[in-house]
Each structure stands twice: as structure tokens, then as C-alpha cells.
Image (cartoon, rainbow, N blue to C red; front, side, top):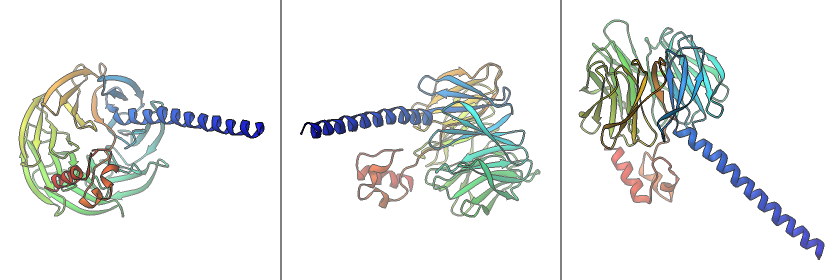
Length: 374
């Protein structure tokens, strides 16, 4: 009996140790993943580095040397890795755990844009000097496909469903293009012609995938494309020489950084400019944090700064340095996890499975879907 009791006690103690160990594992690694997901990554074109931002304090918490000039940056959905498109025809892969470059991938000539699929499986790279798009398998960090025939590609955005990749480009003369790529086949599915717009720059897709917002860096316009018909839906006049654009997680607003040191706030329901916010000079990069509460713009002014805008008030809450002479050109947060796309996903407890946004009940979930489909 004593032996049996001792054995039972050991089993209980062993189980308890395993539970505590598991709990510690989840706390440590779960917290690490959550922390990585909330951090912002800034590509510094002059310093050839990447700065890591902690949005809780709006400070630079780490700097990663690349040894190459980054033109664009993207972060995986889990926040574990950041990918930079570099001017020397490479992509640097950065580990968020160690804040170091873990590998370098050769791509086409002069990559200027990069985006990662919502499932984190692939990174798409716009090779402006090769008229192509490289597809990187993020599990192996190797190029698994090259998509030719994309005219002077510049920037890339991917639909929330992960079905389509949209690439801005131009013919080198007067016309701009948005090339639509089917991710199932990695073939061009459609091309949207935008006359008199050779300076297409930034692009962002609404969470419901219905619209693409494209900036014309040589003018004063943001083109809104209907992705179902692959046609121009409307044009919104913003500040001069608009560059980058991002859309809030709820799809309600598009934020555009302009060459006249402002950020335009577009109401996506009416496609009109609701607000204009003054920011630091030479604003080149823009990204909205995963919570949708703050907009970050990078400015290559003399002090190389980052401006933070509250989406609630559309006012600047703080401006801080990314480091003297760093030349921040782009910023990115982790690819967002999106909510439901149809009402059936809200049924039978499905509403409880979504994490961004979260819902208290089925009714809230359905209301979200209704808003997204408006």
C-alpha cells in the first residue's frame, strides 16, 4: 500500500511539474509571440539597417545591420520574421527572436516592394529592374516561382483572403498599371490600366477585398479600383505626390502620406478626404498598427523621425527619432489576422474563433460582416 501511495504521489507531483512547465512555456513563448506581433519594423535606406519599434513606448528597442540598402519591408503574421527587399537584388530575412539576419535570398533586379500572404507561407517581391515578381517560400526561404511580364513593378499588396496579389507599375511613359496575380497559379489574372498616371506608388486592399487604393506619386490622386471588375471605381484628390497608403483593420479609413508633409484620411464609405494631418517633412513610409489605433509615418528629414497619429482623433500624439542619418523609407507591422467574410462563419460558435477583431457574441460578428459588405 505504501509503495502504491508513493507511486501515486510521484505521479501527481510529476503531473504538477509538467503542468507548471507547460504553463511557463506558454507564458514565455506566448508572450514572446504576442510581443513580436505588436512591434514595428523600419527599413533605413541610408543606414542600411532595420529599426525595431516598441509601440507601447514608441521607442527604438533594437537596430539590425543589413549591409544592404532596404527599399521595402514586410513582417510575417506571427511576427517571427521580417523580410526586406534590398537594392542589391536580395531579400534579407530577420529573426524577431534574435534581431539578426538569419539568411539572404537572391531575387530579381532592383526589388522595390514586398508583401507576405496572410497565412505567412509566401513573400512576393516586386523586381522593378527585371519586370518580374519573385515568390519566396518562407518555410525554406527559397524562390519557388518567378512571374514575368509585370511592367516596372513598384509596390505590392495581397488580399486578406490570400487569393490575389496586386502590383503597381508603369510602362515608363504615361500609363500606370495594376497587375493582378492569382496566387493559386502564380499567373497574371488581370491588368488594370490607369492612363496619365506613370507614378503609381503605394497600394492597399480593403479587408473585404472589394477595393484597391493606389497612390499616384506624380500627381494628387488616389485611384480606387473595383477588384471584382478590375476597373477604376473612382478617384480621390489628396495632397501632392502621395506615396504610401494603408487601411484600418475595420476598413473604414485609408491613410495616405503625401509629399507636402501631410497625411490624408480617406473615408472609404464616401471616398472623400475627412481629415488632413500635418507630419514631419519628407514622409515616405506609412503603416497602421494591428490594433488600428495608431498610424506611423517615417520621415527622411534631417533627424530621421517617426510620427505617430491617433486614428481616434486624427492628431499627432508623438514624434520620435529613428536615429540620426538613418533615412527611414518604409515601415511594417505583422500581416493582420482578419475577421469573418460571411455570416455563416459566425454561426455555431464560430464567432468565438476570431482574434482580430474579437466578438462577444454571434450578433456582433454578423454586424461586422454586414459592415464589411456595405
